[in-house]
Image 1 (cartoon, rainbow, N blue to C red):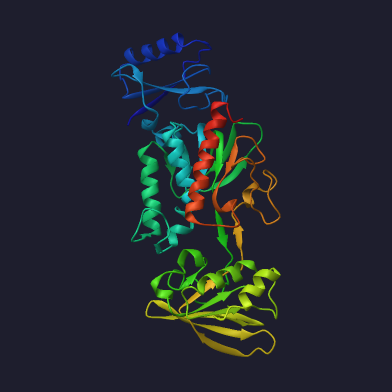
Image 2 (tube, rainbow, N blue to C red):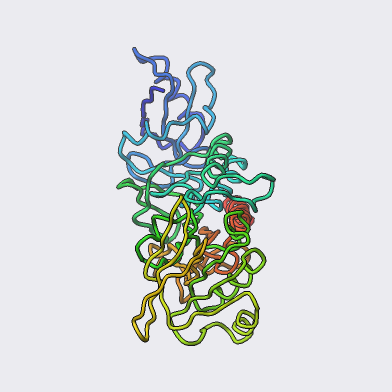
Length: 398
């Protein structure tokens, strides 16, 4: 699509003068472009917003079609073409993150005609993009591959008009009085509302074989993967000593022949009730003062772990079909330190749904949820964030 940027430099407060300026441009140029964009002061039709040549963030961008002298639908605007003009851009909603929370927020925002801009991050799809079979997401009785689920959500968001910045990362945010601004690959974008869905990363062991066998027996979520056929009636390892590790071990007793709970100390740091439940279960065997030194595999699946006793230094090998790492998560919220209210572990605090400490900024998914951390709960929060953002923009939720 050929685009031309026109700045009539008018200060008209009504609609007539900028409309006539566009008509004049369209019909009295030697070469009429297919689409023409021009800037007007605020107070007219609230379509796409963008700064003017004078860099005033409160101006609005309109699109007029030469063929029918009507407004071009919002979804047809070509953002890459506009970027060639190298100036700031205004969005209704920018969504940072492309996991279940981000894509669901995009679907709901797009259906509300907000034309959200999704910044996918360096790893589009979040953690599910590296997950093999997802069997607990509603609507897929045979399960669905994690990347396929993310692609389906993306296509659904695009169908309703969501715009996407692929393989792009936000490196800077300004959450002072709106409009907010984010820096994406060196380009500044302004937005009236912001949805943060940056997720969290599981803490990793950092040992040989962990990355190689991830998705092939190494996992970070028993609820997500524990029921897979590869783990049924097999010995499994859980690494960790907190409540999460105990919960994972207890959950896995439904499927495993034996669960080994490996902890680097001589007692669990979990709450007494969780520790008693785990240690009292006949299928759970604790291995104290021990760390995992390496993960071993063969025939495309984990087959054992190398262990080391922290007191004696003695090493050993333990056969198992899976390694469930439960040593905590790290929310990807470093960018928002000092800008939003975070809890001591870095999770974004939300109030009355998905509202953060800054009005107009919303958060959803694993960067907020430290308890459930499921694809379906993240999707639900993404829906909530989109609805909260829509209400905020309409003035009813501000």
